[in-house]
Structures are given as structure tokens and as C-alpha cells.
Image 1 (cartoon, rainbow, N blue to C red):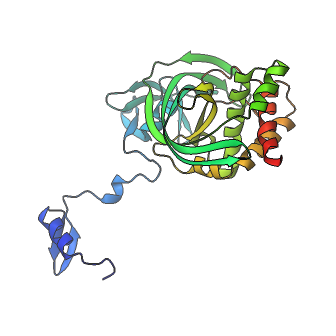
Image 2: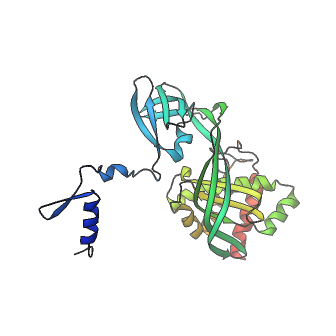
Image 3: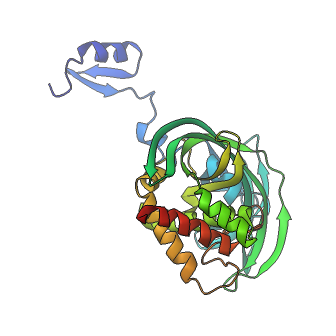
Length: 309
């Protein structure tokens, strides 16, 4: 018997009506739905939103609740089988997004604001005087608005506010301290420390998928000159899926390579003040403000410099 003693368990399941015994074999009761139908291989949470064509009354697709506010918010352009649909209404109580077909020459992109609290530190390491951490966090995410952007040219046509409730979920994150020397250098040069933190967060989030083999939307970040849980300036990168999916743990393990690759990408970018290729983020709820590319380079130089001293 490969699975050990199962007779007691089988008898219990039969008594509960979940199994039926026929000719010395057990079969799933017809009253039980097909188990595979209850498992979504593309989602991590059980709750979904139904996207319904309001004109035809038919179901187009289902969207996981954790990404619904990003993909099917009011005013969003949703693509289904090559056709574009305008989301007219998002019914939060019934978990329904009402859509109608609409050919457009633009797409929509949400803007969000995040807050993060540390609940438990699981790992810590010293990278030559720079402390790096990995642990459990609670993230509060608010989708504050969206942009309409022209296809191909990326021109911003308009920005619209959204009034959606915050989403809170537990997940995993990495975070790290900043060398005091980098803070002093930024102050001496008259650069924007907050802008440097913010830009460094964006740049690292853009580079991490190269190491963790994920999409940029699978991770998020928070940067602050003072975090109440640590009492110091901090940059956080978190898994953007409830419970975490291993991305930031990989980043924690490869943090030195992440710093080096991020510095290389920012320094080699030919722009002057920062651009989408280096320190700007398409998801930033603060409209990519403040950002200071030079301050970011100073921060990363000191982080990388600490490794070789």
C-alpha cells in the first residue's frame, strides 16, 4: 500500500457521503463537483470577478480578485480574444465587471499607492555593513486612478481618478538599509534623497524580473525616508500576490547581483533626468514624482561599493 493505512479514512469519507463503494472499489460521489474545476491554475485566490458583455449578457471571462482593480476598473480597456471592451461598471458587491465592445486606439494603465508594514523578519544578512532583510509583510494597495495612453506612441491622452477601496494582503518582501555614506553624499551634493530612494525602488523592480523570471506586475515596491517599523530609510520590494510566490526571496538571495545590475542599467541609460527605461515606473501612483536619477546613482554606487571595500 503506497499511501499507508487508508481503510479508516475511506470509511469516514464514505460515511460523510463523499465516496461510494462498488465492487470493493471507492468512487467519488456524484454529489461532489469535479475537484479540478475548483482549482485555478492561473490564480492564487479563490475569489473571481465575472466580466460580462452587457449587450449580449454573456460571460466573457473571469478575473482574479487580486488583479480586478487593475484590469477591470471603471473606464478600463479590456482585451478579450483580440477585441477591445470598455468596462462601464464594476459591481463590487456582486463581483461583476460590465463591459461593452468598443474599438479604440488607446489602452489604459492604472496608478497605485502602496503602504507596507513588517509583521515578521524571517531572514537577515550582512552584505559588508549593509543589512538586508526578508520576511512577512502586510501590504495595503490603493488604485488611485488610470491613464489613457495612445497605442504605439505611448502618448498620455488623459488621466482619470478612481474611487476604489484599499486592498490589504499578507505577502513576502525583501528590504535593505542604506549606507550612511550615500546619505551624506546626497546631502553634500544638494540632491533629493527622497527622489533617489523612489527612483532606486523603481529601477530595482524593473531589473529583478531578469533574475527571478517573473513579470514586472508580479512585484511591487515602497520607498520611504523613514519607515515606522524600522526607524530608518528603507526600500521594500514585495511579491504582489497574497502569501508570496518566491520572487523576492530569490531577490534576497541575489541582492548583490541585483544592485550591480541596477546600477549598470541606470548609469548606462543615456537620459538626463530619468526615463521609462531606467527609473520611471508605469504603475507609479505618484506620477513618477519625486525622482532623482543622480541621487539613485549615488545610492547604488555606495551599495555596490560596500561589496568591494
